[in-house]
Length: 307
Ligand code: PLP
Image (cartoon, rainbow, N blue to C red; front, side):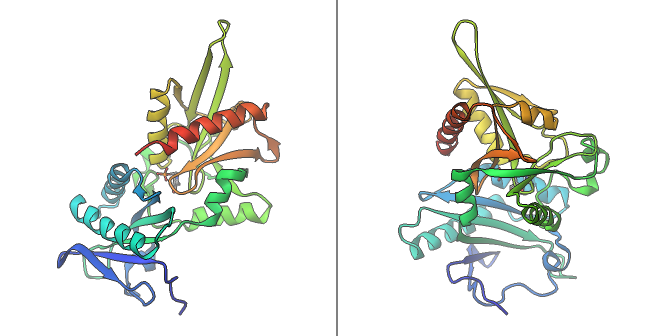
């Protein structure tokens, strides 16, 4: 068996250890019969620690609770999570002096078969180099059909469309498909032709218009949040910051044409932050690179400024 990188920190939630139980990531820690491993039955969150600060913890804890509720999983109390997260973050910072960013994952599986109690743990590990690269260089994206209508989430709650479950095999397969045809990432569309989300990101677009009186209106738009997509904590935080900075906000429904007509399109998520979309299905996005760059710079400033 290959062991986890030495730089991974693991902290299990454990009633006998109020601050969490630190575990050795280089040796096996999960039972082979854990339903997270055998069925992908569980939920998770990925957070970024940037310059020593954990970003958007309340929003991630709230979404973790929402995902757990959708799966009928009983989570430990938020205080137990906060304590274990704090242990993991402190230990990671202590063992990686000077590190500017790393990832903290919150993981919950349905637990060992027959045990009836979830397995809950926090993992701190290096930030993927790819996310950092995409922030700077941008991404080429392909549209891929997810095969169901944008109103399916309400009709079929058992599909768990708005929950962040451990079953990411489909999302990873879509990314591999994109890579196999020379693209970096994916924007899923619905069977009824709507723009949904990326496999690990939320889609944003913007328009910048100069009004007759010379003032500038900037409008930031994302797909409808109830279109069977994961409500992004990054999108939520950025929208709040953009509104406070005078941007107009909009929520879909969006079609691919809206992406091609936009001044700029981005994929946003907690770990990669904001990645500008350069091409979609080979077509250049945005008619003026200077406008796109200005909008990206402004959104980056707003997003990096959030707590
Ligand atoms: N949509 C999906 C399917 C995701 O997996 C993610 C994050 O991984 C997002 C959207 C963006 O969510 P957040 O901004 O909370 O990271």
